[in-house]
Image (cartoon, rainbow, N blue to C red; front, side):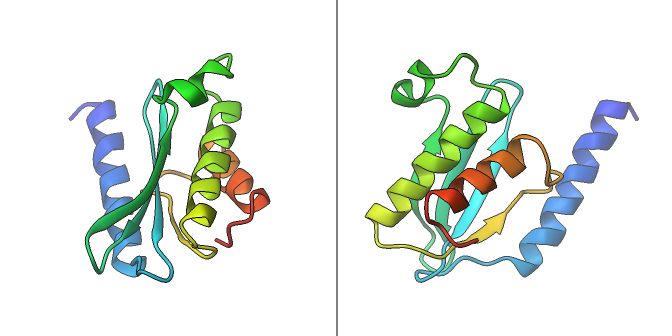
Length: 122
């Protein structure tokens, strides 16, 4: 097995372990975060209804225009702020944070901190 595949398998196992405990509801949806090499994505998911409540990512032109890069902590903070504003507009104040197996530092931490500063309770 290659090192890249080992990392991917380990992250998938961590994600499944986290998902056993973290479940989103209509009152408290799951804030799921994904990061790729170039972009950061966040979405609020109501697992009981199987619906996505709100999304934000650096793929959106409105978010990406004001950023120097779509793959740094500043971009992740912008996504966190945007998803928090959209959640508050939908009438949601509390969410469950799902880091999707990623370590809680860097872009993931920046996104969570920005969402907290914008008014979400994680």
